[in-house]
Figure 1 (cartoon, rainbow, N blue to C red):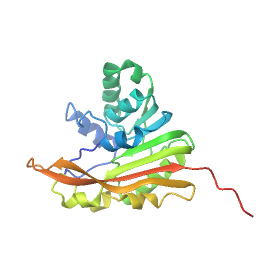
Figure 2: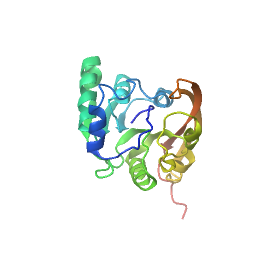
Figure 3: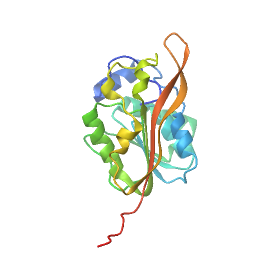
Figure 4: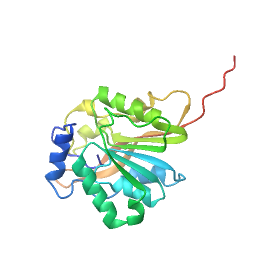
Length: 222
């Protein structure tokens, strides 16, 4: 997914996402999500998982920073488009990206495998969202970073195009409840940025931003 969403009722299966990508030559902006850039620019590159990579802008940006990237998406159409874009834009970055066609709810990522897990605007209903994010938490290596960015509930009244389904929206502290005491929360906030309404007016919206680092298991005191 991306930092740009629409007000149609969303669907979550591969056929619906393929249809959406086939309906337009480009669905997203082509730019990396701003909170990813803000939060990851200071991290040493390692192995990253880009969850719901869409047309590949985040994965390409990460690869150009030196990350080895697993770019996962449910849509085969999106992955083909993303791979072609990466190949055309930067062959060196392209070589650092594994394009993974998968539904992470069905086939969760490997545990303890990534130095960075980035989930940008995965707007799922509460039950599958909890399942997905819980699996993502487990996939982060000790010393690694989890970055979750989502549309904050206040966006529903901000005047920007959003599906009128409050259950799809969440705050950073809601996601933080999935973390145990091995984790250190670095950022937990509703971060403002500007966006345009359907009429072209500029308004302030908020992204739910959670950045956390996984530490080692605490030694027993018994």
